[in-house]
Structures are given as C-alpha cells and as structure tokens.
Amino acid sequence: MPAATLLRAGERATSRSTFYRRANAGAYERIARGLYLPSDADAADWDWLEAAAKHPKATICLTSALAYYDLTDDIPQALDIAIPRGSRTPATEGAIAWHHFAADSFGLGRTTIAIPGSNMHIGIYSPERSIADAFRLRGSLGYELGRDALRRWLGQGGKPADLLEIASKLPRTRGPLLRTLEVMA
Image (cartoon, rainbow, N blue to C red; front, side, top):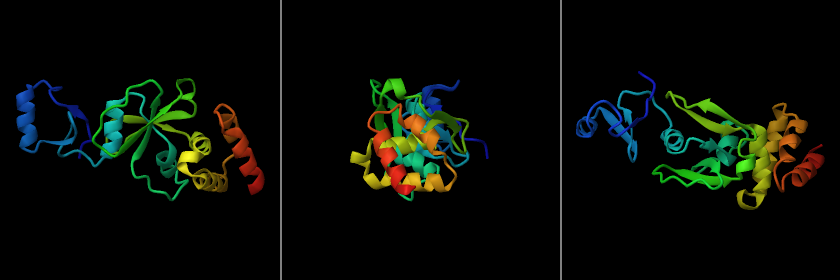
C-alpha cells in the first residue's frame, strides 16, 4: 500500500467536481473538512494528519507527548497540540486539544517526526520538555503526571542536568522540579 498522501479538495489537476465524484465513488476517504486520503493508503493517525495539515507549527505536547515516549500510562482523551501564542486556533473535527505556548520558548525542545503511514511530518516536544511542561502546568494537568513521568524517565536513564536546563527556561518549573528530584534521590 502507498504511504498516505493528504489531499485537499480541488488540489489535484482534476476539477473540483471530478474530485468529489471520485470521493463519493470511494477513491478517497474524508478525514476532515477539505482533507482526504486515497482509500488504498496505509493506515495513519487521522488526528496527527489533521493537526499537521491545519497548522504548520503543530507540535505534540503534554500527555500526548509523554504517551508517545512511554512516560505515562494515561491515555489522552484528545491529541494535545501546541501552537505559538497569538496563532489562530484551527477549526478541526478530530479529537484535538489545542494549547497556546509562549512564542519565545515555543521551539525549546521541539523536533519533528514522520507521521507513521504517511509522507507528512509533525512537531513533537522532547521528553525533557514534556516533563517540564507537566510540572509547569501541574495545576491543570494534575501533580501526579509530571512526577510519574519523571520517575519513568529517570528509570530509562534520563539525565537530570538536561531536564533542569530546559526547566530553567520555562516559568514556574525549576523549583517544583528540583524539590521532586530531591525527594526521589
């Protein structure tokens, strides 16, 4: 099967009406408003595809990133996606929770990964940034999420110096993280 190539309605050399006729005939599968996949494409995560298509800086964050790195047993109800503060929140149909992160620290710990089964890429925060964000947003995410992720990360050989370097660049993060590291030592 070919890799999933995301199509937008009317984007191909065919006319819009021909495209919709082929979609109605089963040649394309609608994943979101205006976004389609060829029906014979490999399986891919539609929420990841939709997020990547709707915003160029879409970045997997918080619980979704921790789950990706196997640092939590929590199953997120929606895909957590960060975009720079001041950006318009895209209208989406998938289970996507949009979060606005400060523009000056948005790129901190951000890399891109290929979306499995497709030819697209999406941003994701590093394990260190994800743990630091869990501590920074502990009031809304819960105090256990960051602590449990930190414990797992340390068990996988994570280096506290790397984590503290990122935490020192984010507000309300370094102090609680240091106290938790002291208790775990």
